[in-house]
Image 1 (cartoon, rainbow, N blue to C red):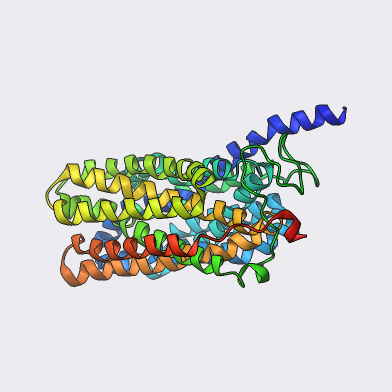
Image 2: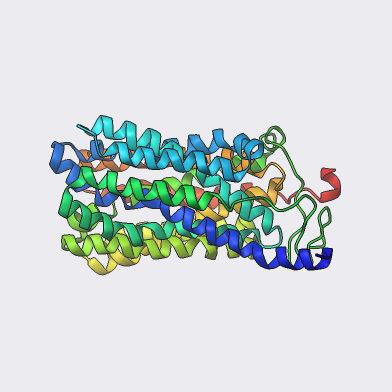
Length: 418
């Protein structure tokens, strides 16, 4: 096979990795349907809203920790072996959750093992997409992680039906068995492109990519954390995830208690909200490519501020406001799962991408833990989920300022990085 023919084949087949990554993320993103589990768990064990949120909180925290620790594994083992490890842990965590006698054991199985497994596996398809698409990082990464956001659309009604037929605890085991088989199978095709390969119009080591910004220098983790841009990105990512996850974690109970929608409609809403969560990823990935991370981030925070204000002032007893506001919030949380990885590659390059983004992703863990704790504590203290949106408004306003001030740095040129 000629070199030209082989390059053409790689150019075409690279989209396959986006599709595989999308399916992997559908399995990994089941955590976004966790609000369907919370009311049955509260009823089963007689626990508070805060306690029912512990598995979700720890899952997301371990998700972030797993990402940070798995970055070097991806570089050493490659994406296939790392995803196999992560997929096994995800399936095991869910299966073992079906044997939990209380919320604390469930938190250990689901949150620690399952969440850690997602952290190990999550960065692999993202790193693969980033390396195969240096010319369209935002779009490729956004489409890959779109599956994570779309997961709840598929899994929330399935989980709700299983909970009704076999109970909330056994549902974890059934879903876990399915995830285990699917993730191990989907891990097998993952690989990075050959050394020195680049798509047509984007030559390696140059800044001549068609319709692309200046080539980013390949900075390692130590170089990255010495740049002010890293801290601005980390802060923006924390705020974006904190605001978004405070909302996502309470989607169903907010609909029931504040908006006054029926239980079946609230469950349906969790599935519907997965659509903007999924669409937000390629949309904001595309916007980040076009507007730069600075303006894509600022736009996201403006939309979060608008949605939080809308639901706080007009959301009580209004199903329409509930749907509109949460659609916007889900859209922007999904957006941050594309803005941050794209910005990491833009500012710091792709050579050490898995390791670097794993470290940037700790912002997601901080946002997840604080968001889950605060939403439950505010509900228990005030008796209403409505007041959760007061801090969300303040955080979004802070985020606009941080994005505009801190994300102005241009990526280093290829020549400067050599």
